[in-house]
Image 1 (cartoon, rainbow, N blue to C red):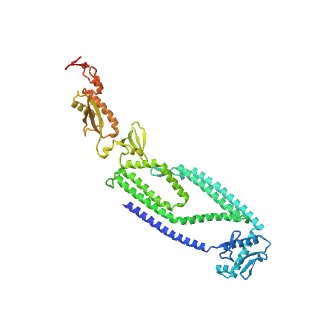
Image 2: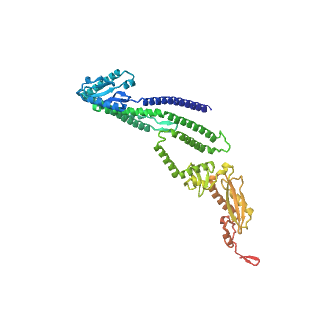
Image 3: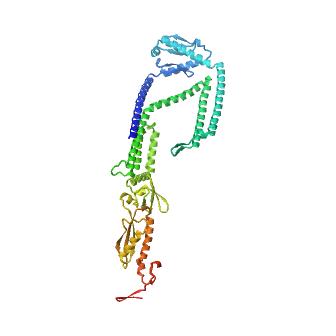
Length: 559
């Protein structure tokens, strides 16, 4: 009871934590969505030089879209920056009727309009002065990066960075083999077998191999990380490749940001899946406790047998997981994608066309379980096969014959066949198994004498019960003989073949002891004048073979 309360408290706490994080994450995501929608509504287009944004446009000028305008201004600034004959100080702002024009002596760059000032919420003069300052600074930096002094500095920085990288690689190639060598030398100290009671999860050698493989992976990850930083860093030392290097860095960080944004966006679905998994886990644990109680007898349901508990639990757990999967699937990434739907259709087709026999065997397995036709250890006969049940699974049943042959029978075949269970009577109705055999004897023998001989043979047989006592039934009165059926009881159904063998031997001995011949009617028809079939050891010392009987009229004469 205390254990159940503990699990219940843990379950409630887990659900409350998940719900709290879920609602807080949902509110955060909604705020991010509103912010992104606002950003899209107030979209701007940047003016840039050498990959660096100077300022942005959001308003039209004389019908020119902001995007086109920003591209034209960027090209004009780049053209002036590449022309070293144009002095930066020659670039100035000139007032016109429609606004302020920024240009050099011979090259027009852009115009600042009242619409730009209104969008920026500053005066047109201040906005033009700000744009002019940023353009001059960007052109100056652009030309400074392409100066011969800067090129020499880039070469020196490249050499220095290369030396540092080589030193780091050398240290890595020295440290990691030393770690491997040291851990191998003292593996007895560092690695102990991981066990839970008598179950060994990982041996010391397996732990060592796992550690070394992990060490190797870490080593290569560090080397790849160094080169990933080194290559863009060297590219950034030179103006012609600086943009490419920055693009590599930006791509990496953009990928991280995109991954993080998608993860945040997916968190509500993830928490829904987590809640379903937690509920599923506790439902399965509760059902396991319930069916264990039914199995060990601490809980009794009318009409529910103990041997049903374990398969019913497995079926219940499967249905719970199937329901959980049906709830979770719509929350999986790409659930509505054509690829996911195509895979689902393919799996459905495989199950439909290729799993018909498997499904029939599964249903057959449940039929055999709930009809309680047999259990493991029972001696049964199914069709032409007879033996002891050694395994009963959901797909097939395995029996061991008297010749120690293992026969696997599909459950669909078992359902379609008749089953004879020699062990069920003791378990289900508390009655021993009846062994029966038939002997045919002539009318010239006293039936009471035959009854006594057959019952004596049964009582002399091992594993034949004295209570209930053996009985003899006279099952038919035929033309030449009487059929005597001996019925005896045994509580050792697994040995009934051996008991039958010993019983038949004892019947022969007991009949011979009292002078009863066991022979066929055809042999009996030519009986007169022949030696008896009873062994000599059972005959009287003065025994002589009888003569032939000759019938003449109403008198019989023996010759």
